Length: 342
Image (cartoon, rainbow, N blue to C red; front, side, top):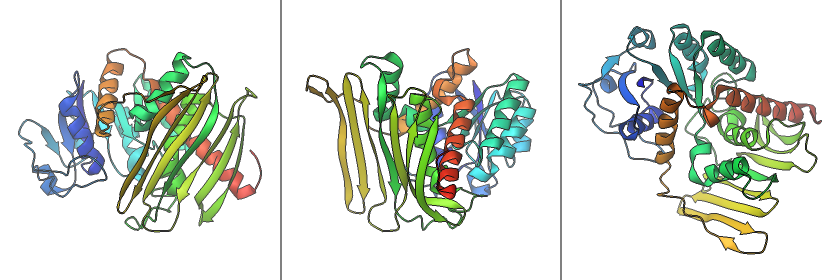
């Protein structure tokens, strides 16, 4: 698979690093409007994980200022979109119309209708539209997906999930529904995608939350499914208190085991409750989950995209799952606004 990255910010940098380690996937091009980064100076890139950006050798890469220019390169099989979210829809549509497969960073769009239209366009063109929902490839969450799909602990009966951050002072557009979408679309969509993978689409959603303009800032939801035994609760959003930047975790119960995990980041460090598998007889298992480097999950994503172009199933990268995740978020927002179940 020959790929080109659109957009060189933090996620573009992380994806670039993933291509250096993936097999069957070759990065051959990138585009960015930043002239310094076109020259290989990526030293200003910094994120919340992974190494900082550095000077890279671009001599073996085709470098473009615009996506339109990069799409004229007939040797590229797939465009890896790492642009700001509000640019995703137009960029994905351009790529599909140009006959390119797409791997797009999450979320696919800012609303479910736009996402669904892109999924249909890809189908009509006979192209793969994949969305890089990385949560399913992080080992502590991939373990859940594998357990559900294999049935090794019996049926998955539900669970509790949370994802909370502190004030988003660095992004003035965070609560703008036309730019970022607030915590539901930027943050909670991770969990919505995971719930879709584990349980399918909910039958009923009951959500309550605090609104900030047209977006929900903090919320709690309960979801039921066609199977009456399956009950799910999920919550998250922003708490406007400094010092507690990020928390996520879950407790998921199967017929023969319960799996727990929690991570919290604070200004003075982190706290981790590692994944525990509590078997029905009381035995507690601490599974080996690898290096713990979240960048490893992006390598798996890129490798999976290459495998899809070689004929394998897209699994968690499927565009339809990403569109469904946005629909779940919209159901939650509707429930909050109307103060009723949907």
